[in-house]
Structure formats: structure tokens, C-alpha cells
Image 1 (cartoon, rainbow, N blue to C red):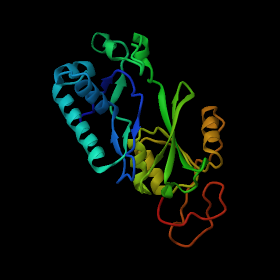
Image 2: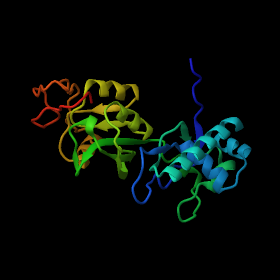
Image 3: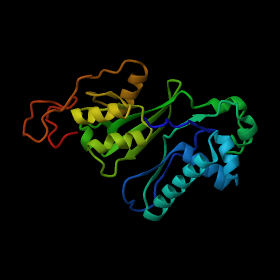
Image 4: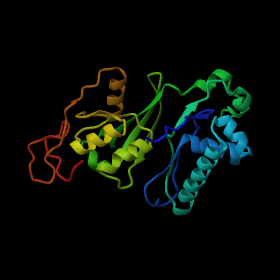
Length: 258
């Protein structure tokens, strides 16, 4: 059995979580985890040694070196090859104040003001919801989704929204894409059995068979009023059979396994 990862301690979530090249981007997004971001912030921006960084993040110096090298490689890949960079996910925990001697002076807002110690706890209850998205509505074919709208929620309130393109990822790869983006819950229309299994394996909660406006669906979900179909499945891919329905649409899914 693989040894479980030790959660890396970070001071706070980044103020910015995506960077997209100006012009034509190439390839799928690069996902920099929050612990990788923290290592770069401490070492490159604040000039900490690897040993000092390890103490703050509550891991070994060897682990910090591995995290840091992975982060630098991803950043280089984004800069050199023009790939969008997202900051999301990873094995981490938000500072609970126990590392105040290491990180209190580094918990700063964009205006430079220092957070109070209790503010280092912010983010522990945050979750990320994804919705298959097209022109403000819930796109009805999961496997063909070109965009997801992401909602960051804290204490039951939406604190941030953004739209992320899949850059050509489809079908089974979308579950991995969502996992890399740190998604906890997916709201969608039609979805195939293979994709449902992939999402379950990724630990992403699924609410399928939903239609209408994406923003409204998320608000209904947060209020415990979302109407969805727990057994929704498009099972007729590639056979010319259009008896099944995707969400509220009156046409078949078609295509391959979603």
C-alpha cells in the first residue's frame, strides 16, 4: 500500500488562481497545486531556504525540494509552451495558527496588511462546484463539454466564479481534468456510465440530469433545493439509438462514451 501524503501547511489561498497566455494558448492547462504554489512563494519570492520552507510547511526538506522542483517545471512548461496555468488542489491544509512563529508575517492581503492569526483558518470549509457550461446554461452532454463554470463556496456562500475551458479534453479525460482543478461537486445534464464511474473514482460528487441556468442551479444546490436525476445515464452512444434523453433535451446524446 502506498504511503499516504502528509498534508502540507500553507498560510492562505492565493489571491489569483489562473494565468492565461495572451494570444493563442497551446495545449491543455498546467495545474499548479497549492502546496507547489506555497513552495515557490516562500523560496523564490520571500527568499526562504529549503529548510525554512520545510519548517513552515511542516514537511521534510527532501519533500520541499521535490515540491519546489515540480512547481518550477510546471511554471516553465506554461511560460515556454504557452499553456494556461491554474492553481488548484494538492495535499495541503490551511494554517490554523499553530505555525504563527513561521508564517504570521507572511499572511498578507493584496494591500500588504497582515492577517490576524485567526484569518489563517479561512478556507478550511471551502468547496469547489463545477457545472458543464455554455452561454450561461448547463450544457447537456458531459463528454462534449468545452467549458466548465467553477464556483468556489465558503460557509455556503459563493465567493468566486470563473469559467475554465477544457482545451479539447473529452470523455474520460474530463474526470481527471476536474480532479486536477480541485472540484468537489459536478452539476451536469446527460452523462454516460463510464464518466460516472470515473467521477466516482476521482471522489467527485455528481448531480446529473439538471437543465437551465448554471447560476440558478448552483444556488438551488446550496439551498438544498436542486432537482436532479441520480440515475441519469446516456447509454446509447454510437448506435444511432435516440430513445434516451440527456437532461431536459429531446434529442439523443450520440457520439462516444461520455
